[in-house]
Length: 104
Image (cartoon, rainbow, N blue to C red; front, side, top):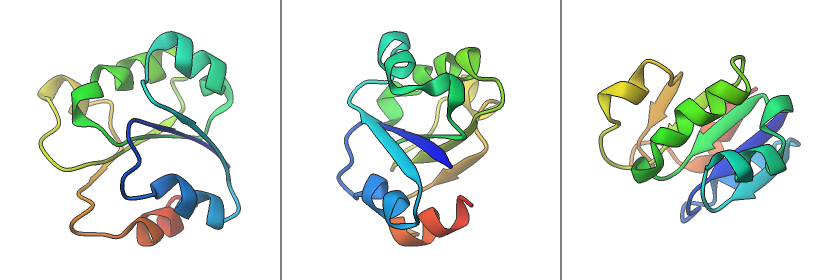
């Protein structure tokens, strides 16, 4: 599985996904240029760790309509992004290892 993790990774979700044997690319900002360079077209999962970058969900879906979108962050996802998101997880409820295991 190929995953892209966008935003600050304070909870180390990228490392947990890698530990499960998956290919992970990280980007600081999920804009079109960064996501293209990270390989969003061929990605299986897009993991967003920053609610302030919710517009990146639409960008990821525009580049790859089949990508699964997981938001792993505290706070509320804006309404416009909820329809394009497959899973929203608060890091205070599930640790990164548990989330990484479920991505398979």
